[in-house]
Image (cartoon, rainbow, N blue to C red):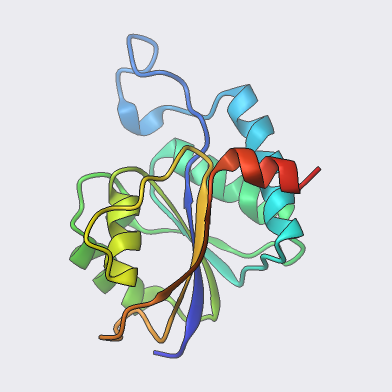
Length: 167
């Protein structure tokens, strides 16, 4: 595998769990969550983010976030569902799945906490998970997903900073 830029993004704010959404996999983004995430995408553009492909969890809120991300970027990269990005999967399963799928240099990965933070930690060799806020993102440069060398954390930003940067 060749070197790549990985952009890990936590899904935006979704509807609350409860009686309205008994099936957690179907919880959508709120209107405000979607609107605020569009501002996050503007901030990502300000930071010069461009993507060749996006991989997302199959859960509705993550897919909606990935679709907003793709729509807001000049490249309009394809969005592909990866079941291993759903909550409850081990980091090694996620990495193994991505190794098979990632073919490009600039890759977006949309997922959930705590798994996304655990993936970031594994990629950079950190002892603890990196805590992602909803709509937050980071860039990690790796020699390859299957590399034994730790990746480099280039930046890790909460959504508030990304929204401000996009204004």
